[in-house]
Length: 95
Length: 289
Figure 1 (tube, chains in turn orange, cyan):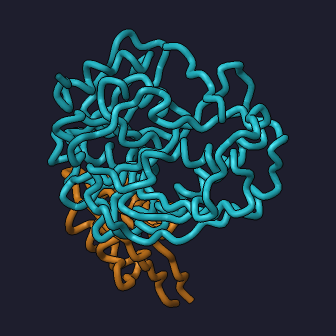
Figure 2 (cartoon, rainbow over the protein chains, first blue to last red):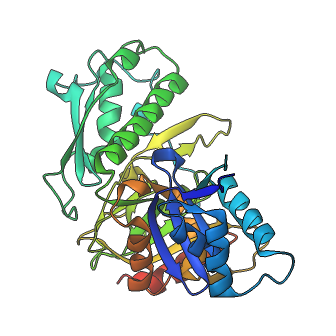
């Protein structure tokens, strides 16, 4: 079975802040500005050219340590789902 | 503040036939605003309507002395002929007023489209110190106080716009001193375009530049004026929805953030009445002599 691949939507611009970033995504009247956490920003960076969910989990674990609650896989999955809802990533399911 | 009175020509049906007919060339009106020029085709319009159009747009008929780019960018031509030609001199004042208001909306859209990707354009009003050009930009969604504030304080500070503030990379403002769209004194939903001169609003005598940017929120429960500094992230989230064609600019979030940084930071201002903001505007741009 192939792992799900996460691919970040190209950003128009991003401005890094102390606690994450503000990003601009989309174009024309559909452009939106969103604030993302430092962890979410790292996901967007890792997934810029596409990255496996597992690989993202490993990198987040190394950078931020284990989640305060639940498994790293569940935490990454919830975070990626939220980013997908916001139009910031696309998830290509594994086969 | 008392409601403005209608000019004699604003009473469209009441106009007499003794008007001087504008020359045919006057039916193509070239306007200069927001660093661009746009031609409005009024062919076929009754002379009184053409005259009224010239009157309310007088500040845009020639490049402003304060306009940083007097030659301007070509924003194209707006064809109002089909619409205005249908309006007879006997038409009601509301019909003529609605046509003028629609032309204002189309002019604004054309100017914004021409400057997309060039200027940082905020849905905002702006007033400046008449002699120094130091300006305060007040950002707010439509229908929430920009026109009222422009009108209330525009006799003390110079009026730049009540609709869209165009800002260059070096913080100059390209003015858009459009007519102010106000409800009729008699009430109701109908609105009328008013020339800034008719409302006694001052014109700038110097190139305007951004001295401060505030987001305004009218709140009748506020006593006096509440000023809250915004952190950069919060400010961008509030400002971005009030920017036109933001995504067309190079590094737009950085450009917005740099504007805030250069002007002492963005602030959220809550107030009950427009006149309450005179002190804040004066503190930002300097009190006029």
